[in-house]
Length: 266
Image: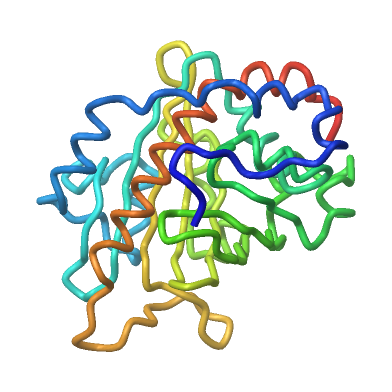
């Protein structure tokens, strides 16, 4: 495990890239209220259940946890986060997810210079195909990742899905509380289902994340893989929450400039 606050390594070639300056700059400070939630322990409210995830897209899950982490009654873990991103548009976020998965590893490193090593799409030709709509460039694509969410650098495979294949009602996309979204199932030390959605809010977007830890792919189906009477250790969602509030706070800071300078170069 590398020293806290130390940045990951970069090559001479990466240092020559125009966006290297985003790697060099100080990371954005995490809001104090988010750090307090992290310190306070498990959220009193649970996340919306995975089977009811359309409520999340619709913005009809307000009785459930919005920012926090914990363990569901069935033993799976959850992480919820909301990040206001001033100056960011829905189009920028649609662009960000494919852009950082192709080209130089530096693209992923600037997102979180202390914890991100690389993210590489397995179908770079599809991602880079100008005929594929930007909002669909993650569909059916897996990202091979090394990142550190607390215990040290670890391998992760994120299998992105078309929302309908994930079980979402695609008619919700493009509505008031869900301008766009991405969803994936992670394979690694602890499988998890992940969804990010965003929508216009004040002078930017509201970016909302949900992770259901212990949900994986079994025989091609997305389902709970935590055995009965077993619970995901609380430190797992706590570590993921800590990472999530760090990386998306920093992304909110850098994305407008990164997009403006690189939007024509995917």
